[in-house]
Length: 286
Image 1 (cartoon, helix red, strand yellow):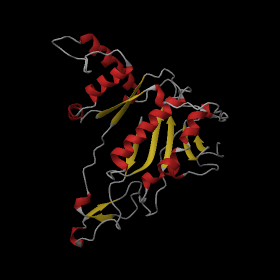
Image 2 (cartoon, rainbow, N blue to C red):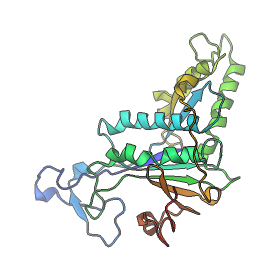
Image 3 (cartoon, rainbow, N blue to C red):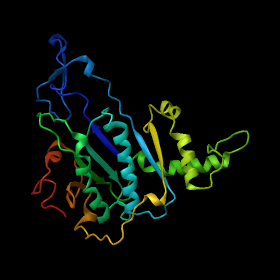
Image 4 (cartoon, rainbow, N blue to C red):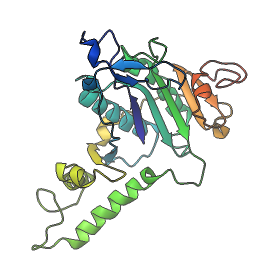
């Protein structure tokens, strides 16, 4: 599962001049402490913040469950966010957080880590113009946290089973008088038809409206044929020392990532983004 954090209040320079009498709403930006002074803004810049969750479901006829498949699905998710939010300017992102299990075949591998180290450069423009509590520009950061082996990761951990169970039940329940299969020819005989059915079942306005108070508010479905998954020939990556015992990675630049044995999201740890004792790690990991 992936999610991004949003800055909602424009900076003083971005806000048009207005009547000082209207500047009566004190706010603090994301990450500011209680000791920081309030910044006063107009009422029009305030809004009710409601978390809206989206589950990205990727269906494919590809049977090789490897790093390149995972990279392709992450790329499609990033493309969706760029098209829907970044380019239109409706939201501003300054961090990309990933949380997953420790599956070595497609997640926790040198191939995947090399791919992840390219994300900061690719996503840096997402934080363009965003400032922190101190007024300084924010640097876009990427994190990948791996959960403890053998433990669930929350509601997101069961999405695949939920989708597969629903498709199977809809096939079993389908009748001429009760059409539960929603493909054009009312059949599900291929992975592409699975994607068509799941999209018609979940990727709808009706589903969103009926799930506004649920943990998952919206489901975004995409189909990826094998031909779209590029698997370079001859690529070889060195193993990362201590990878299996590391549960948090923060890529710095291509081929280089910082790592921690365990994840911690306190302010002090989040500000520690350089090598050295007491920061992300005692050494860079290349």
